[in-house]
Length: 458
Image (cartoon, rainbow, N blue to C red; front, side, top):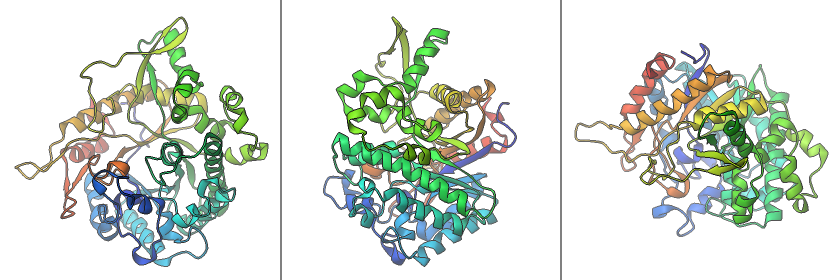
């Protein structure tokens, strides 16, 4: 068995996707609240106004976590719930909710892992320019300082930002996520840079305000590739493709900046933008200062990694060539390819490059689930998906990757952003009409995985 004795098993959620309680108890608007009001922005006109009603059903949900045997729970804090205006005086009722959540978790023996920002940017700060405003990193730093000062007597693990690739590129360039704008290339680089600086300000705030020893990091998503064969030549081509600038992809669609892993990660872990890409995009980057990069590269304790799929490549004349997609290949309901090998190669390549303990902060399957005639939710596809992915993660650990934990996405079905309620990722089924929770077969299976520290995977 490769999973270390101290390995942490958990599940993840995000505030906007589960809490509901729009503008209740003094909560301010987020960009997602406003985006959902736009006709056609979200499938079926769905909104996060109620979501899973976790705001009112939190004790029931932590009870489900205890039933599943979770050792840890990764949740995000709603920034506009704490600061309705984005800054200034905190909203005490918002703070009280997270106090109750943290205390409930600890009472049940579940370690809280707090994500400070998971996409629900305060609308009032967006009106001031949002991520384009040069003060935006300081806004986040002040928010992070408050969270750390208030919660670090009980919360020992933090993530600053979740998936800047998504909230910047999908929200500010493609416009398919909140706030739904389409910035120029010049402006998108500034927004990216400010978000990375915000991470740095957040890390500084955590270190300066923690009341006890804490651990903190960053949770980007990634574009994973893996070699078709495990020859040294193809492994090296895959490694290069994971981090180098693919000019053909960028020139075909600038949106593929999303896939340039090194652009989003090298500044945080290495203190610099990747040289090949920085040179290529240099005309847009005259505002980047050396002191910015020093700020971004604050010491972190682990490497958070959100990963769902990948792509196979092989080498031809020393170049990376993507394998043709097979007709009828296995896909999740959301349309992502099932590629378990990515959970071996991504941790391996990222650990080799950045030398930080890996925590898989999201991994899971969108499925067509429903309550069956026997009153249960049978989801064998999810069990198979997670089994195959976890066995690849285990293999990476056997081959020397230092791994600290795994958080499946998600604890429960929820509002899946622009897909609304059409995608079910949870270990727990949610009936959105009644808010009844039903633990799926995969939830009971995951409990056994946790109990055996992965030994039951075979």
